[in-house]
Image (spheres, helix red, strand yellow):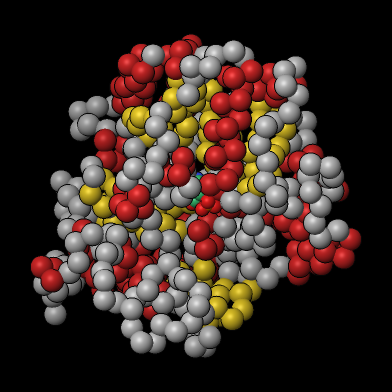
Length: 469
Ligand code: PLP
């Protein structure tokens, strides 16, 4: 029977005072008091095994993380070997072989002029580090007025104070108004499905977006702008949206014109996820000055993220203060670096990025075929093994579902109940929550497993459509 939405909660941020039940005795603070997470006992390949006996296909690799799959014995061994040699040293005085080797492997031959890598623990830390590096660059260049960061609405760059400020995920900001980095502004995302006008071509959409960015530079005062930050292929904020042709190259040209640093956040879309090691490589090679990577770097075996720095930024510090005035206790942690090194060697040896590109084509065609007749599927977009299905109440007008329905989350739950885990990226559309699910499976997934995923997704969508038709 159909559901009456007037009784459903209205916001994404659940601000309820009376949900702590008497069973809530354990001490780990979960993400939600009312919705306890599933206990995972074991994970292997593309599968999670829950304590209640269920097997789940991890079709989103956690949050696009477990790129080589779970339970890889070679990575386990590399971690153990490293722990037996050196478990920790402080980077003020020491370095370790896996940290050196990891940087050398990723930046062998300084691809695109990217010369140095700085490893920290999480995506947010990497973005914070990138922003501080940009600031130090201008400090050393004697341009102290450059403090302003321009980002894009619906972008996501992290959950710490500065990274949250420059992110557009409204739901995550609700209780934290006032916690902010003061010098920021936002421009439109590159999101053709929602914002390219009906009578507009891609050739017109791109310059329109770029004009808006140039206007923002001029409005702030170009001499005050420190950095423009963007995800080359947008992640959880709007769901694997690729930019229109010429957009990244246009961004690069604008940043060059006004002497602004270009930061690419490839924390979700990088390390092969879109079918090339760097997502920006498929967009005309518009090279960033600083970039961040994370999820696929350690593949989930240990927390690690990286800031990759172009030679022109490195040179300013090299010939200036001769140090990056920033550091963390656990930066370049040897166990994390050993895990990431093992993951990256497996990716190279097994040709997993080429496999991701090939399997991505198969996944796209399966999604388009399987979901063809679902009236609530407004858009299917992505690249490589990074795909999003966006749901709408009306395909023609692209009207979103009432946010109280949580349509995307319902589809995600229905698929999970049938053994497939999807990523619930509920981005915002014009200030309202949109409804998406994201597929970002491990690169080792088979065609048969992809077929199961798509079939379960179709059934999940159909089960929810009939409740809200
Ligand atoms: N930047 C992007 C593009 C992300 O997708 C994320 C996480 O999803 C972050 C930054 C923040 O990373 P973390 O959650 O590891 O702090």
